[in-house]
Length: 229
Image (tube, rainbow, N blue to C red; front, side, top):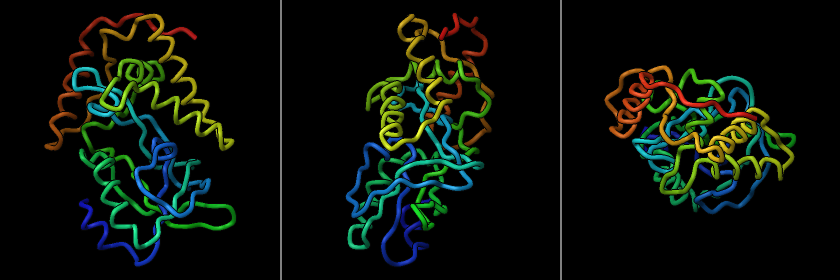
């Protein structure tokens, strides 16, 4: 969905934006209010191959997406109507260059009320979407990923630290980070890119298709040592 198409569907007035990953600790827009919020019907998951921000085509990292089912704590931002156009343009530039997300208005509970907030939901039909991959496989992608915004482990660590600051924990994400840090410390993240189920074919985003090819090649390589806790 283009920015113009999404904007045309928005009701007039202020807009809430729900951050569940880097937007929690590094928003790219001005806002009038910030509050802890819980999205219902969606959960946070490490499921998007990153071939630019937190990885490369040859060594992709792994970043978060919002997936259906469950619930998710995050940060909700209220953007006033006069600044909405500028804020949305920045969000589209940052979150939508590969169209790996679907922008949606989802219910988010803030204290004793529920608002509809813009959230970037992972598109399971996109070639950068990672389906079946165990904790160790995700940790290896996190350990190896380094992109224009730095190491993938920093992305995970910053997200967890911000969650801890507001009293929220994600034990599964913590275990992935610990395993990734162990891999980096042991030097076992250099050669191998973990294999995962091949994504569905798509004609979008050559960098995502390249990452998928790397993963398929990796499936034919002997697997190296596993992380130890």
